[in-house]
Length: 627
Image (tube, rainbow, N blue to C red):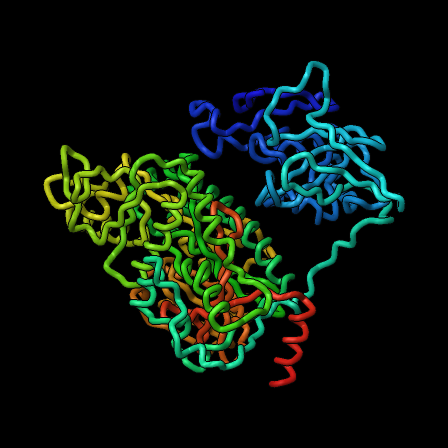
């Protein structure tokens, strides 16, 4: 059977609650012109986004039970919820989670949860259980098959079940490579329930180890048969770190910390997107970002175009005994992809490091899949500056694009571009229609500001009689740019006080403000320019003393103030963990290190491995004993 058009009623679940098709490719652009149009409300209460699985479950619970649960980033996060709110009196009712295969059976009205795998990779899945039997259960759900239900049927699927000799109740998934985590029941009876405990932050900090010296450093190890590897070697040689004393050293994270890093990346991307939407609806907040007002309509148009989604970005974290805290989201022109996806794995092979596994082993494949999902038929031009690091970064991304079936050309600078009948073309007269860039959007903004000041105008000028400028390419409405213009918002550090305002005391966030407060003075704080790169123009103050400062090009920019959270120091190095989000989901990680308090452009990247919790504890004990 063929899937139905977006918004078609597929059937009605118990309580006469409609289930809708979520085939986004068929959504009517007039009816859903922007992201805001996809928000679903009942009685003024936000249910989620049309027509996702979580939206249906929240709506079903509200209509039938007058209850809703807290907003979640991913469907599988529901398994960790501890309560649900009753709207009649705002009381909290207990939720308990039961593993698939346990003795406590699901019951009608409970929530069935899938892990992030197979058909439901990245997000997981959730459904409402409508009927329970020894041999089967029936469920109602959205965002699964998008097929109209038979007349009079009140469920979407029937899943087979089995009962083991010890009384365990197992539900068999019917989608390939999927796995059912369990079910969540609103009940006071917690017998056989999973114990949802807070993670022990003692298992978070990175630890360091070293492989034996067998002369590995005397021979080349980076694969130069691929252009990106060859370009990297031409730039940096056969090494990750510039310190020869660290050539055989590597860092480790526990599996638990790695899992929490993945969870945090997924959740934070979701929260940054919510904050971006909030900012773009509020001119007063948008003024804090110091963006030319002439660009505001273009940024909003970019955000509202649902095809203008991010490919990738990078979060910077501190993982320590204080927990996991994010400093910022590099949602535009992030770096370190080649190093994370390939080089730290090649280092482990060459140096004989067998501990655990690489946290970047899936990054390249995730990028390929993200580019495939764009279904690009035109030639895609990569625009880069004449910079060695940008060269290997561009070549690495080019290989992922080409594996996704995209035809790619790299443009070094702008000298080979020219105008032809009002459009910009390359040296072979191929029109520039799609672009991925290594330039930061802020570089374009600097050009816009300069042009507007020089010509005393309030809008952007395009001049097809002179040589094409960067602004002429990237801001033309007929050019699709990856990453899109709206990434100026989450990349700008002015988003950080907005995040703290929207999600105060969130465990992954640091108190951030537009003005210096007494609370920040007492805790210690970091001054950051709202726009900056490579750790430039950072000032760190603790007990009224400046304990760290970097110079740079962004000293005149507007600043924000963020609560001081020091990086963990290991082997006299301050260690920052970076995670990559591809198409909005966790895809890999690496570490950057520096003897100073600030990670900068010249800071080293060292290999990172993920090891089991028990092995981590042994390694950490040895590290602590050796201090």
